[in-house]
Amino acid sequence: MNKAELIEAMASSAGLSKADAKKALDGFINATSSALKKGDRISLIGFGSFSISKRSARTGRNPQTGKEIKIAAKNVVRFKAGADLSKNVN
Image (cartoon, rainbow, N blue to C red; front, top):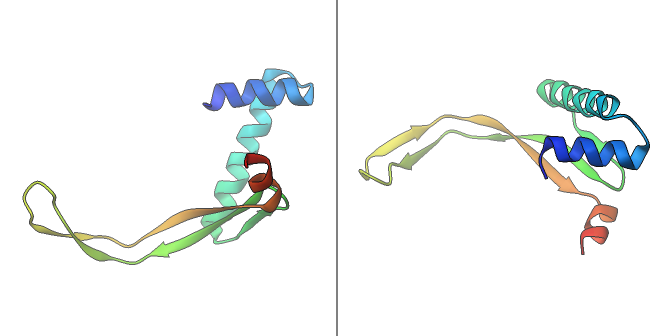
């Protein structure tokens, strides 16, 4: 499912216009991004939680040449599915 398909599904499920569903999805994405950028954790009971995890710098290897390379440290987004979402998927 891509973003357009998600917007269409949201609109039909909630009885909204596609424009309103797009605004709602964009608002959710912006609010989530801002909160994660500040280091906050986002918990949606039943759905799951988003959090930031720090990945430390490490040494890797270029698979073509075998030469060692340095991989910089970075923050990564983690998602842990909630109980209701896991139950609905299985």
